[in-house]
Length: 187
Image (cartoon, rainbow, N blue to C red; front, side, top):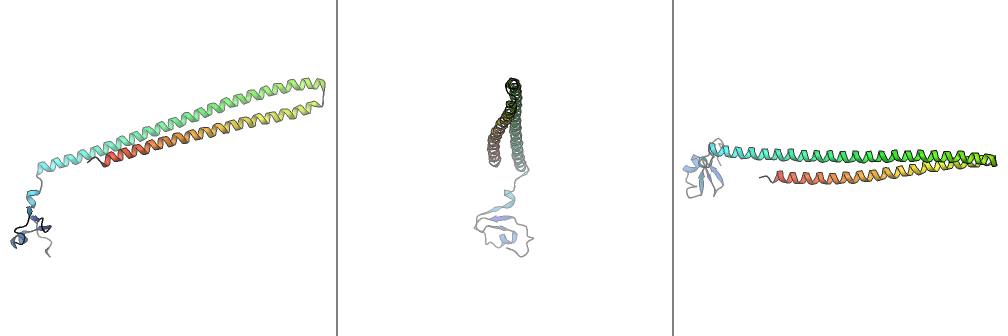
C-alpha cells in the first residue's frame, strides 16, 4: 500500500486482505475490520520445534519408503536375473542333450552305413555309391532336424524370457506406483 516498502507490518486485515503497519492503524480505516496481530499468530519456540519434528518425521518416512521401494525393485530385478539365468541354463542343457542325441544318431547312422556297405559290397559294387549318397543325405537331414529343434528351443526360451521380463516389469511398475502413492499421500 505504501510507496516505502520498508515499513514493518504488525497486523493483518482479513476484510481488506492487506498487511497493516502502524500508519495504517493510525488512519483508523480498518477500525471495525476483522484483524489479527501478526505477533500473536507467530508460533513460539515450542510450536516451531513440534513443526520441525513433524517435518523431520515426514522426511524420514519418505526416505524410508524410497529405500524400501528401491530395495524391493532391486530384489525383483535380482529374481528376474536369476530366472533368466535359470532359463538360459535350461536352454544350454537342452542343447547339450540334443547334441548328444545328434551324436548318437550320427554314430548309429554311421554304424548302419558301414554294415550296409559291407553287405552291399559283397553283393554289388555299384550300389556302394548309391548308399554313400543316401548316407550323406541322412546326415544332412539329421543335422537339419536338430538345427530345427534347437531353433525351436531358442524361440521357446526367448518367449519365456519375454513373459518373465513382462511379468517382472509389471510387478516393478506396480511397486513404483504403490510406493510413489504412499510417498505422495504421507501427509
